[in-house]
Structures are given as C-alpha cells and as structure tokens.
Length: 84
Image 1 (cartoon, rainbow, N blue to C red):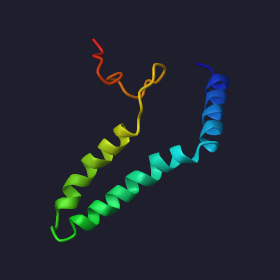
Image 2: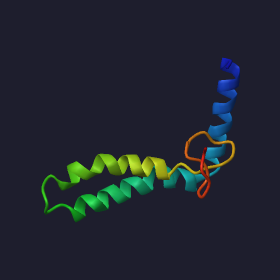
Image 3: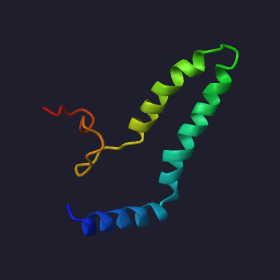
C-alpha cells in the first residue's frame, strides 16, 4: 500500500469525523463517563474497580466498533451471522 493511499484515506476519515461530533462523543466521552460512574459505585469496595476496569476498557472498545460490510474492525461479522 503506498503512502499516498494511506494519507488520502486518513484525510478522508478525519474529514468525516470532523463533520460528525456525535461519533467522537460516543467513542471518547461515553466510555469515560461510564468508567467514572463505576468508580463511584465501587468506591466503598477497595480493589474491585482496579480488578474490573481493564476488562471494561476492552469491552467498551469493542462495543464502539460497529460492523459494516467494508469494515475490518470486528472480526466476528454482523450480528446473527456466523463467519464460517
């Protein structure tokens, strides 16, 4: 893959993100708010949040990835369809 194609694709994606602030909020802000709320929920139980936070970060990352026919983000494919 040439550098020109990579730069053109990157510029296109950044331009699309610039026009869609809701996506940026969903990807960046919502997981931070949820983790902050969980921190306060488990405030009285020491060690619980430090044990569950890393798996939740992985869960939030994979849930922000939506499947589309052109997307390679989610390897499992669309919901209800096996990738066999």
